[in-house]
Length: 333
Picture (tube, rainbow, N blue to C red):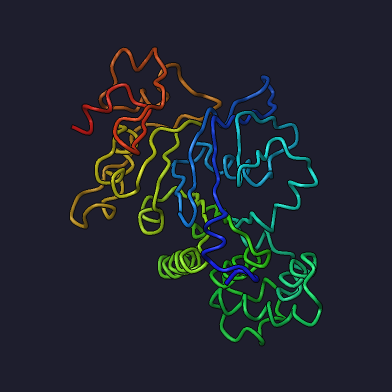
């Protein structure tokens, strides 16, 4: 149960639609387009994985959703949350949504948490701002700590962030995100700094919370194995643009873009434990050094002349499968 709402009620009300999202940032050489015409949906009670190498624009896309962009950023397109365009709402309304209807789990909990306040006080402050009666705050914090899998919740309320391990700090961040009773949860590389065992526990926790609470969730990651275990849908980004999107199982088993195929082949555990890994060749393109035509063509083993001169549009190649490759049908077979 999220606050006083049932999981069914939350799921019925939650839906994010991203349509032609554009994010421009100021730079020394003028404005730089770091997110370029990105589109995807997060249906109710669904996890969407946003995947790509560093510089692909995935974190900037998530930050645009929650409204945490650098000063001077300009946005275009549409960000519709429950049929309300977040790019058009007043700043006060956007602040109200952030932390309540929409919450974020950051990559580095030690940097995100206040080192001068106990974790119990930090989570409790979210509840107090939401209007929770003082007598209920402590009880609810204990419930959130228990939900996040923190052992001995009552005994840890008075601890500071530095007194927790990396995995336990991430659990505190999860409790902090859930304190506002969100319907949409954004998780930005939530397991990157953790060892494999702790990473698996956090992923199971996020999956269980998403399913139990009926949340819509956007999971940002550079690791296909993470997305394969958690996400229902996947969006693959490269150089600020969408390369491919569709159901996770279909995309990972039969990629329709050479970049997706290269990502899958570089992580053999995604499909088989016996296949050899094939690291991606070359250097990732970024919005700052995006080549003409298809941005992936300098690294693509099947690139042709058209790929070097013509930027491919994102198009539907089969029901629910979208890709930005001129020759996707040949790849899928």
